[in-house]
Amino acid sequence: MEMELVKVNYRGIEHKIRLLHEAAQEIISINSTGEILTRVVETAVSICESESGFILLQDDLSKNIYIRAEKGFFYEKPTLMQVRGNDSLINHVIYSGKPVRVTAPDIKIAIVFLAKSLLCVPMISPRQKKGALCVVNWYTSNEFSLDDEYLLFTLANYASRSLENVQFVNELKKKVTFDWLTGVMNRRAFEEILNSSLEYCKRYGTHLTILFIDIDGLKTYNDTYGHVAGDERIKAVAELLKKQKRITDHVARYGGDEFAIIATNTDLKSTKELAERIQKTAELSTPFSITTHCPQPGFTLSMGMASYPVNGKEAIDLLKAADKALYKAKRAGKNQIMCPD
Image (cartoon, rainbow, N blue to C red; front, side, top):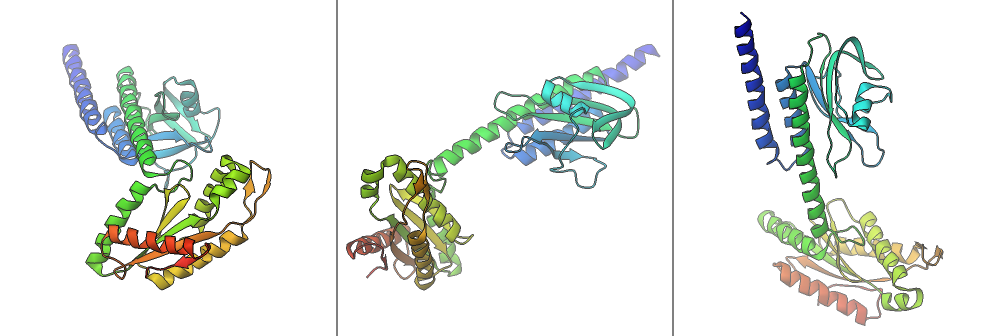
């Protein structure tokens, strides 16, 4: 009888190790944070044969701890629910970095949650935010074993590394997609979206207009106030464009003091209305300068437009037409909005 019991336990741990191995291979190939968290929680519940499981991660801005994924949770909507109670076991795990495995009549997990047995391990990696992976039995006092703790800890390490890889890839994508100074798209991303938008226009017969925007007199402004102040003005223009555009439009810093907007499903007439609104807002603005410590006078913008299919059917043709219209606006005395000839 004793030998048979050992044999059953052996098969049990072997099965759990196989579950861990399969999950680890899958997790490292996933490039979505949400999918990683979901797969990890499902594996944790299976390995530990628990009633439920969940992952908690610290928010970057508020530093509060929230449930980000769960399985079998008794609460109706646990996702993004904040876990409170500084004296709870979960907070102890997250901030001490040490696992907790306990069985008791009433375990205080958070300020309003009580359970019968709990196993919670930290999620730790050099770049990853604080977090924890937990499995819980709410109604039965089934004890979690030392093997469960080891396997859950190993799973949490896989999860942390996978999340860190996704974060690194996303940061890298952001660096090659967005302008470092203004936070809007860079020229490369702009042209990629322009090409895909044109394909959509060709397929469904819709319009598209490019609006090129140039900050008038930025060189003189730099010479007067300095290049740091000039950078502030560039950022102010970017913020203005982001506020004035529609949700479906795309803003980019095309280069230096020049910006561009893709106005989707919009013709020249509607885009000119957008341009006039931007122009008026710029003239009335008084952005505060951290360099000169006082509000700076409003600025003027020169703009050129080109629309698909009127001014061109390919990206290169539209870009040339919009650039030519912008040059015409500059020659006409600046603070002008021009269309191609």
